[in-house]
Image (tube, rainbow, N blue to C red; front, top):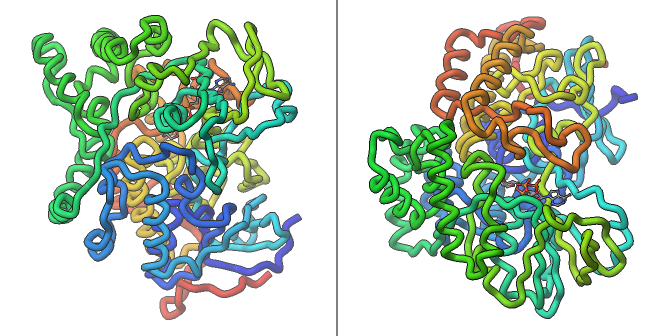
Length: 558
Ligand code: NA7
């Protein structure tokens, strides 16, 4: 039972990642009584936790930073085109310090429960340290990839060496030289780790269940002169991001796949393979995403690239996906990944042939043999998108739990509101624009829209806001329709809610997790909703007399 004596805020933001940092900045600027609650001991979200070697942006660094402050843009020098985790965390800390945001953040605070009080129209939060808080509006800055998941293998506790998920890679320096290391998993994370540590470990064994299509990141340093040129183009860069479906600088090739010759297609692909970042995925022909035949032709092209880079043809074949085409799952970008398998100290174990049986005291056992290790790294992914919501006991009207409501997948209005959960707002929620785009670009859109919305609510003195069932149904159906057009709908990936390690998320039932219509369409849609007086949202509550301040409410009467 949540007691009624806790501190009250007008807004509580959960999560001090990229979304939470920007959201609190906007609220503080408005003078709102708000706080950020963060479970970790520092800010930065993804970049606080993922400290594994090789963790870095796949977004061009200068498209990942916040765009809201010219001064910030002018003073920050991104050192690499695709900046690595330590630098990214430094950047986010710099932002928090520059704008004095840290004093509005509470660390080491895990929200265990959030219950909506239908009488007071407030959320009552229970923090794991026993405190209770209330707030009028609950803003979810939960990470979409913040709940790491481990395999369900027998004997995991019996291993005598060190083992951890990549999300929990030790914060202190870990000496890998002369160590026998296992990496389980070859998603975006595994591929980054493997490429980075292959030449730094004694011996590396990669346990691969399914290969992923992957292509070179083509990273490089950014000189002072180059950074000056980037700064001068920031307006243009952000305008490009706003125009492209993915929110990146990469624009799709508008020519029809079948309108150009095979030679022209290959010429484009040769160029894209050497282009930095997601160009190979997002500056490609649009048919790659929707047309089986086009996708198969491009996948065959990438397969050939893999064969050229991996010396042992048998190993090369194992690294080429056979169950899905290029780009229907999130494309991991790699540096030295395929070359790692040409090294004498690196070995690939195909779990399709010899599945993992258990973890032993000294290592791993497959159906074929035992392997000894000093370190086991689980690069086994996340309970993505909805996992962080599921971990909190969120109860809306009539005691309805969000966990129950989203049992078979999320349903939202615009990815921002949930019917039955009034006053809960998600600037980067499931089915919103940010989950499928260059994350900070989507986050800025979401936070700006939600903040404008709150200003509207405060200006009118509403105390309760809730999406209608009808609006939610229509949006969720629209999100599902978008999936129906994409080849990704059949992929076993976190885009479709698949995770073999999470009960109920095993293969079979698609979850419509992300909005696939692209950033411009999304922005257009949410702006129309705002222009129409926030249609689809019921705004109610006792109007505040014109003279009374709508912001900075103190403790509520209880
Ligand atoms: P992903 O992309 O979900 O990849 C997880 C990998 O781990 C993938 O290769 C899985 O194989 C493998 N996996 C998961 N469970 C097991 C078990 N039980 N046994 C063997 N192998 C397993 O997670 P990432 O962390 O790489 O990337 C997530 C996102 O974070 C990424 O897209 C970026 O946006 C940042 P499977 O394919 O399921 O056969």
